[in-house]
Length: 447
Ligand code: PEP
Ligand code: MN
Image (cartoon, rainbow, N blue to C red; front, top):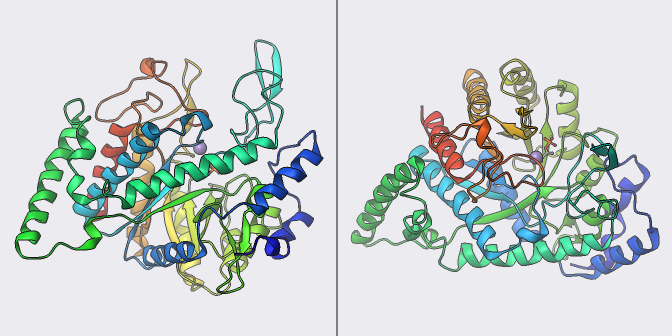
């Protein structure tokens, strides 16, 4: 990796319109920050990105299932062992459910260690007659509703780098240092089992896994695969200045990698075919996701393949479909059909969150668990109907006991939302709702 060579190919986006970028009042300060960032060590290695591309290739070919999840927006003040462990634990439990109950290898990717930047539908927010710039994520400005906090500050880009770095460090320690050993399936559930129906259901499954592990051990086999998990980091590649500063030339191959995370995706609001984000993504070798909302046309889908996956390499491109429960059955079939007919092997993944957001009477932005589930069902139905592979789920979740989405086995009602509504942006499934979802998705996958 050579920081000095990051400038060339990773900067072609600068000639194109870039949506959703902050307007910094002090461009000199920005320049200094970016120069520092370009000199910092990479957060991930090119070889790890290649490995994830290969794993996603298996997803695209129907041999594995992607579980991608985490916060809508990570927050600097939530970079603590407690929060990170809880999130990881939730993802590991979901993964155990999916692997065991659906008998499919699960590729585990967090919305983590870099998910600090938010595209917004509106650029201002008004409260009690006061209008201020909208909050764009901790990497840009402050959440507090004050004029001072809402000014974009380039120093926050460095904070994002350091927050990502320490998160990734802990994630690596947890996933390879014994905590993620499959024999810990019960331990991940300890604080949870009594209080929730999904915790109890999980406990029964963990006992079965234990029996299977004991049986294998008695037979003389105790594979290394059970002792650590492969876990990858992903985020939306929104702030192109930051992503470019972390884009480096891989000394093995001479190719560019965005070393801010293993996988990056382009969001629904920044996927303009001739825009800067698609151009940036076309230059780096990381696995790339594109969010596809309900207005996506066949030409667009085929266009992304031509721009981002000209070699038709399974694992390079993941389409993350977020149409809404009421639209997915109508809109998705044609896209899947035409993409399949084009000869490309993309991974199809459902994001059942972003098309199902509404505002409750209390003013909270929320989602119904049943709508989330219904979109996943619709996604599976479409793929079953066409004989293609429903490759995974992309969800907003937290390991904390929040009350942000309504419904679930341990039901949260609209009137409960105010109790622990903690998200900095979109409503997340809590741990119990996440596990409920994993059990239901495993059933759908198996059937
Ligand atoms: C998100 O993933 O948080 C997001 C903003 O999604 P989308 O681009 O699909 O709206
Ligand atoms: Mn979101």
